Image 1 (cartoon, rainbow, N blue to C red):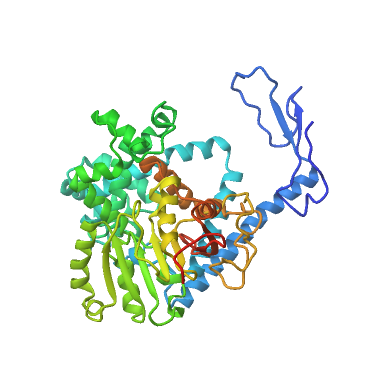
Image 2 (image 1 turned 30 degrees about the horizontal axis):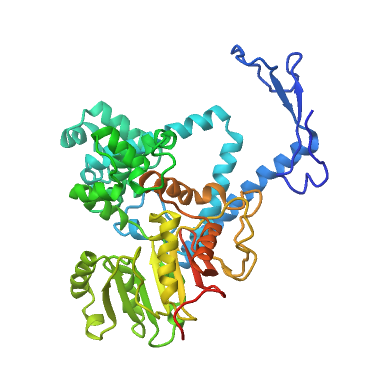
Length: 519
């Protein structure tokens, strides 16, 4: 018999106790079903017996999830109304929808909604169905790729009444019976709409996958090269005696897959993209497909004094800086990246931000941030999606190079997808005022019970993206505690964490015992 403490069980639904009894006779619970499958275990079958008090606690936990779902729906409705937007429908079609993120309040509500819905369904659904649903999920991506590569959303444009599968199949060159099954599967999952049997139309999601939308490149990339060379080889790479222990980007699961498929060794994902321009173009297009809220959406840039300096380290052609330059002409900006990228950036700014060039607001300075220090004495050093591309040792080198040239009041802003462990180490005090939340007035950032403290499936993209970085580059999306440790090893300390739901900003300064440039 296994039992837990009974005190406080009703108050905390997560603290429940169970009695496990050997099955010595037919089950006596009402509604219990005896399996007819032969047992393959040498141990006795067991039946879980729940005490009445703990059974009530579990009911309370389920009802609490339902209440969270209801409240999150109402909060979402309020957020849409405050933004002046209509309540959405899956049947809406808008060219702007793929680029519209909505407010932080909306994302906070959806985070809770997703976490609660998933936890509720996984709790009540029989375990075999849960497992089977999970292993079938890659097939949805495969179906999406069929739709995108065959340009089905484009073929359905302007046909709100739908297009018969016979005409659609003839246009895209796929056998109609097979195509119908692919589109029907996607329609059930709310991508496309089956208007009448075998007549299909676009809906909000499928419309966002037309060729002119950059989201189509996301589907192509995640449905083709990433699984072909990366995801399908993850386990094999992890247990390989050479690839498993390595954190070299060329020894990632992607590199392992390339080696197995082509015979080429020591090929990282970026090496692959350099070899195949079409892959590089698709990758670059996919990487600019969506915004998760950037620094200009959340950080109080307007509060910086006139003449303050801002250096974007590894900033590409400067798309982020261009937004900052337009909104904050009182700042002096520096863009740093590889020499070839900087040359592209100069052309990009001439074509799109000539006024900033005329007023001398932007400087272009090439850098290899792994081995060289950036421009010295900047008030803000900003890095967007840089740290997650590199293993810890390289990240520490990058941060040390920045720390070396910081003045006493400089700040480092790291814009990534920092996420929280279910259990924290204490390096970050989530209850303090230094953890800045999306919703004013709330503190600590913890999810409401009975959700996991980090919102569980409500933040699944951050955790899946971490595995994505592991698979493709041997890199990682880091927890807040891991960012704090990187900072410590580089002579920096965390000042604030800006929780932006789908992304975050970790703000650091010189540690008290670290040296930068003298003031």
